[in-house]
Length: 115
Length: 115
Image 1 (cartoon, rainbow over the protein chains, first blue to last red):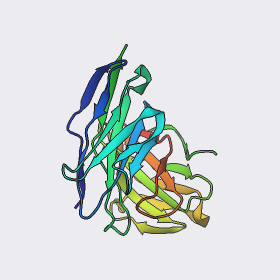
Image 2 (cartoon, rainbow over the protein chains, first blue to last red; image 1 turned 90 degrees about the horizontal axis):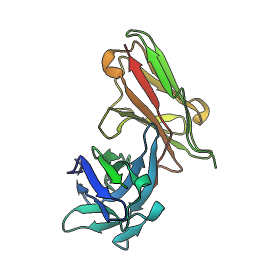
Image 3 (cartoon, chains in turn cyan, brown; image 1 turned 180 degrees about the vertical axis):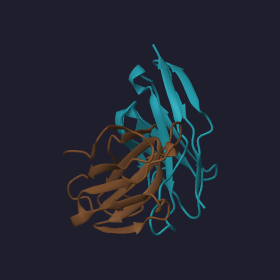
């Protein structure tokens, strides 16, 4: 069975500082990995995904994520955080062996960026 | 391009009452998903449609939940009767195809409160 762990319930960072949101996964085969962001009273917005190829994936709003197969991780990063990045971030995994492509989401990490 | 549309955005009902949620996916998206999101948790899949066919409803509590996707476009999720534990956000998502690498796009959700 596939699973995703986001070890931090909340990440606090000052504006302008680097932001990292951690995600580790467990899946059979090569994973398909996704990051979504959720603002209050809004649905999930797609940020980026890793399917294959370059381990460093660039996405929306200046975010990027690095796939590390040996550490089974897919951490989300942003070089310089903005106050507007304050939101709830979800990592999700899909297994290529799952014919229905079911998403398994992590519990989410609340990011708080202070001015 | 319009995103996934859901209505209503908020619904408050008494327990044992019926309730229905409506979803209009992104135009041309054949795959539609309904998710349940409890507070502080990631979304959990309830049902997935390929066109008008429900291909994965294993997580749908069929004693009180039902869903339909007539004509393979709009979808309705119904709860009858609602229970206190059904209070949550119900998210609809769509994707162009059913492939495991395909991105799901989410609507804003319907926040249900059962009193």
